[in-house]
Length: 346
Image 1 (tube, helix red, strand yellow):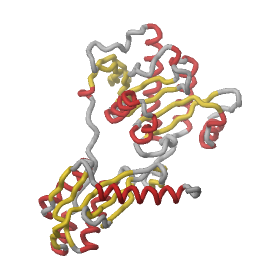
Image 2 (cartoon, one colour):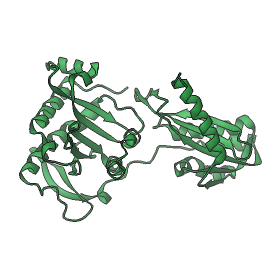
Image 3 (cartoon, helix red, strand yellow):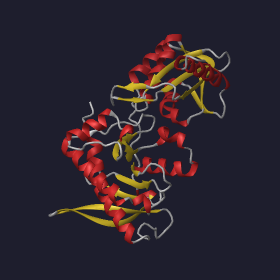
Image 4 (tube, one colour):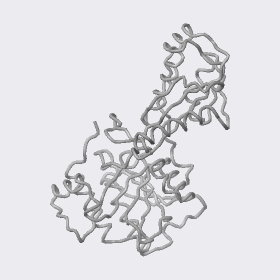
């Protein structure tokens, strides 16, 4: 279970947010003025940018690690903010009116002695993970954000006096504040890094069940068939992820016969656990019907993590293709059904 931030953490966060609000860096910084701060404990870099220069909602966004930076760059290129829930990996501090606060936000402020007034704006802290609904901070997220916020305020102050502070010496470089542990505590140094210097995130923790595969190989016969396999999501369907205790947009797997359009399998999975879930759903399709197809066609290379090991073990040929007609027809039909479930007027 994810622990909530302590009162001490909330006080630190609100103190930092108030200092940021008083500084108003959005009056002299652009969204493209991005800089990195390496969080001392985790070693993960938070890439920070100030928003609000265009008169819209103001605040600070902290993108986590390489995936967060990539999501920031993708949003800048596309300007498609409908994609934000799909790709954003960040922590946000947004300044909002009191009526935009949730009861949980107000409860925290009351516990640390902050009274709300209808005429003022207040910081709202949220955790954004791809395919999850923006949610309240955990203790872990607060621990990450506190030192990053403190140092971000320092950078905003320095930028106010020196507008060339974040100007890279070479294309593709980012200004970085790096913590250095000394006998007297932590000291911060200025550095420049490129995207190649940022460590890659760990690959999905997916383990092939060899015992299950041997059972399938013994029980199921090869069949001269081609299956189309893919997954999709829709914001019309939101479920709770019990592991993270927060709502998410699940991935929906479909396994469809290319020739007949018959659906051999389907499954829902949370974004963080879909590889394992889809593997066992595919195995269940083999065992339920008693045969293994000659080929499986996919469009999304992400599924190769699941399917590549099956080529050698079960003799299945896996092909990445551009189009999957039968899968798309089944997907359209399912999306129409889900839309009717969530919209009674249809």
